Length: 246
Image 1 (cartoon, rainbow, N blue to C red):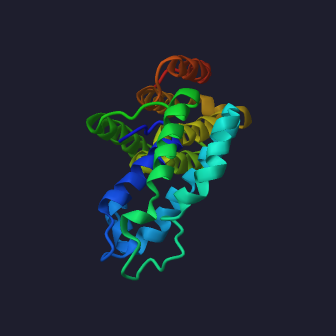
Image 2: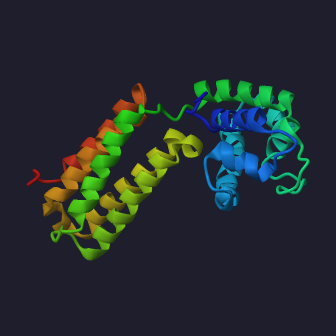
């Protein structure tokens, strides 16, 4: 999957797949359904997720501060959006076919991906077997949470929502990437941290320690190098506030 550790790489992968799959006697809508692996009725939702990669690329390019990369985005960013938000009717043939994706714009996108993979990498993608193991661990937490009575109802509800967010991010990593998984975990950490301050009695729950340990494993799987150590330092601060698990 190309440079999946940044949004330019993920958009490059998707647009390359579209260019390879498109032909004039197939509607753009049908081609996108094939490329994104969704029913045609879900194409608009899936394309909205793809389109969201473009402003994210711009945010990171500006954040990295290289004027030449910003100029490339300004020159070619609009062309990346053409096959996603085309003026051509998505259900009509003949369609633009592969020409909807400009090869020069695609090449520039590949260059930006290489730049962002160095300047703002999100992490790594575990193999499918490891992902299945991690998702199973989250589902086990959800099953246990259903019977957990040592936490306030509001906190149980929040943890339930955040654990589902993590599974969603792992399922949609082709577009969201490692960064989306990281953000979902950060929301869970934030929820627990706030609750530990507002409801001190929650610190007596061994379930929270199980959550922290499971999420630590996911964080390690999706992060690389120095980022892992920084993340683990943060987790250790949370773990120190929790009692031993049951």
